[in-house]
Amino acid sequence: MYQPAITGTGVFTPQQVITNEELVVAFNAYADLENDRNADAIAAGTMDAIPHSDTDFIFKASGIRQRHVIDKTGVLDPHVMHPLLRQRADDEPSLMCEMALDACHKALARAGVDADEIDLVICAASNMERAYPAVAVEIQQELGAGGFAFDMNVACSSATFGIQAAADMIRAGSVRKAIVVNPEICSAHLEWRDRDCHFIFGDVATATVLERSDDATGAWFEVLSTRCATQFSNNIRNNNGFLRRSRPDGLNDRRDMQFMQNGRKVFKEVLPLVSAHMLGHLSQEGINQSALRRLWLHQANKTMNDFIGKKVLGRTPEPGEQPNILQDYANTSSAGSIIAFSKYSDDFAPGDLGMICSFGAGYSVGSVLVRRH
Image (cartoon, rainbow, N blue to C red; front, side):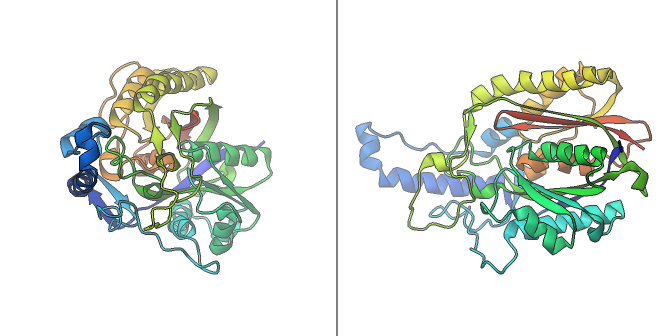
């Protein structure tokens, strides 16, 4: 048995940014257009007018101030209200692959590992750009990695589930070095025309290098243990199954083909599920909650994270014990907890303990207990 270690992480951040102020202007213009178009039905009481959004509502509901996206022009056009993503030719690298490579190269450089040393690539994300061939195999080829590759989808928990799969294979000896990459184009499956959720998501890609601890050349995090759980629920759902393309003709414009959630039920059901999962993981390892120096949580909603942090630590987290990147990145699905880990882990001293945890549709929960070396 070999000891798996996290030796490097990388983050690709799109250059384009949409602030809450920009988003509200676009949404309200769209709402006015739709309300004017349906004025007779609204007056007759057969249709409800679309209410305006505002920045106070967005920040209070989520803690988000801005989000990075691949394309903002389509999102901010009240006649379009979704990103305009060019359909790529079959002989071109896919958009997900392009994003993934940037994050992978950063993670490999941080780990001091060459791409041809990697013998496992897992592309773990909430939506894949295509059904097949696997995006992971494309990334493997463009990266120059060896071994094998496969895609994985466990919605917002994809990264932690991918880390468990890679860690288990390293532990068993079937692979020596792996990279788990999470290219999340969340803007393409968000319904930007729905006031209740139009502010939630952003785009990003993260990558995590795992290898045998004996091979680690710098500071590293021992993967002490991982724990995953799933429980079926319809309260977070996307019936499309693939990224939305530019459709100016409006075909297949069903609301259930984009991101949907019953926010109140999610809040009520997910919080105790995640808190119990994390505490159970610690108990399983014989570790007291007071021993944790930091939690790197899925970046879904600040109120949710504050609640979970308080439950898991048994007190209100001190500044720095539960880093929040929501205000800058918004919800980036599976990548969120890895962004937090990548940005807020270098200050750990040898022996310090922390837990990466993500949760989302499924329901799914994945946790990774790590110790600094």
